[in-house]
Image 1 (cartoon, helix red, strand yellow):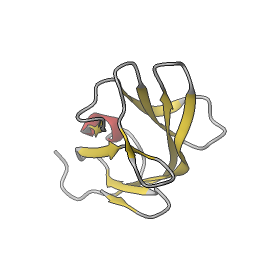
Image 2 (image 1 turned 180 degrees about the vertical axis):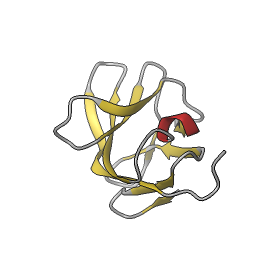
Image 3 (image 1 turned 90 degrees about the vertical axis):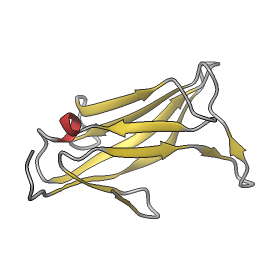
Image 4 (image 1 turned 120 degrees about the vertical axis):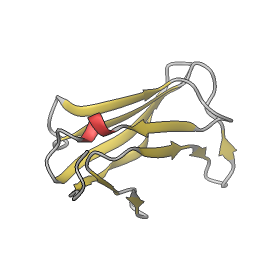
Amino acid sequence: MKKDKYNNIEITRGDTEFIDVSLIDNKGNFIPFEIGDIVYMTVKEDILQTEFKFQKIVKDFDEGVAHILISPHDTKPLDFKDYIYDVQVTDKNGIISTIVKPAIFRIGGEVTLE
């Protein structure tokens, strides 16, 4: 997986990938996710679509970090092309924040099929 400074992601279709998401305040301090927080990563065809291609939901955190698992079955049925994704958090108090603004989620080609 490749990620650039604009949060664009490129992965190979059908591979297993792990994406770690954490919160950093404007002073550079780490803010851990807590019990009751929910992190959503949603991938869509484009920003105007109502249906998503897949969505990952994380409710359990390791030392305050959300570990998002992209499994082969998430991307295997998708075409090689650019999609759009974002990451949203609903905190334990019900406050909703988009922590990764819409960015490109590119599904790249594969040679070895398993």
